Amino acid sequence: MQFTRKHLLGLEELTADEIRMILDTSVPFKEISERQIKKVPVLRGKTIINLFFEPSTRTRTSFEFAEKRLSADTINVGISQSSVVKGETLVDTARNLEAMRIDMVVIRHSASGAPAFLSRRIDSNVINAGDGWHEHPTQGLLDMLTIRDHFGRLEGLKVVIVGDILHSRVARSNIWGLKKMGAEVGVCGPPTLVPRAIASLGVKIYPRIEDVLAEADVLNVLRIQLERMHSNMFPSLGEYNKLYGITTAKLEKAGRDVLILHPGPMNRGVEIDSDVADGGHQVILKQVTNGVAVRMAVLFLLSGGIPAGASEAARMSES
Ligand code: CP
Image (cartoon, rainbow, N blue to C red; front, top):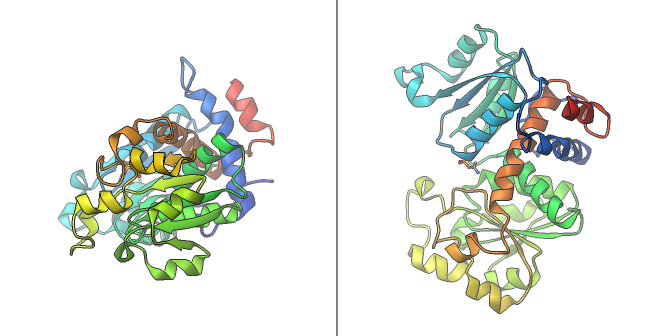
């Protein structure tokens, strides 16, 4: 089976087979990053623009690593260096970049729907690197790959997303992706940060973290996005930590082995304590490592590459 989509805009629109295809294709790409010479000629001659209108450490650098390791030519455009600050529109910016003959645009934008909007107006492949509160599909994919690496499956697992669900594109991509792959998904956080409507996506709402810790196989702990809050959504960061923060004391009290993910960046001492963030339950840096492989797979498949299982990814990993 071939990956036939032109863009990666979100996991809501992907089928379970397409998600499995990306995860399976990521596996042979992992090995390339472990080589002395971390480069294969898969995207030689392709030009990719990374258009980041919001700050990023992990997503921007791992897309750039993925592109360079696949031998694409890459250019990073940050909002502060672009003519957007002089009033140029997103579409004009992208069309001007296209006039220089590019093949793909990786875009992060504060407006939900910006990648989809762009995909209808330019010819290049568009990859959503996080849009507003909407989706962060490659984060959802790398989270699923990391969970699958640990358990050998996604089906039947109980995954609970903890924290600021309201503002989280990571939560939405996790929910869409994990549900399609047969996992049970729950959310937990202060009522002001857990929209009731999320239940309509088939998600269980847990009011108390203690109930989560008694049941969950996996916690995906989200950052409290203070920069998106224009009023107080909870009394204090200390109280948030006490009620919803993932601490060693809470994990010990639960007495169960729970796998802990965090998409980063972390607020240590708020949603997660340092001893948990650096401790034996977590796979936070494995997520970051997997991010490069997942993004290589996405770039490869969108450029017409043959999914793993079908032979080309394996052939390519030997070249
Ligand atoms: N997880 C994530 O999107 O991190 P960055 O904001 O650093 O890219």
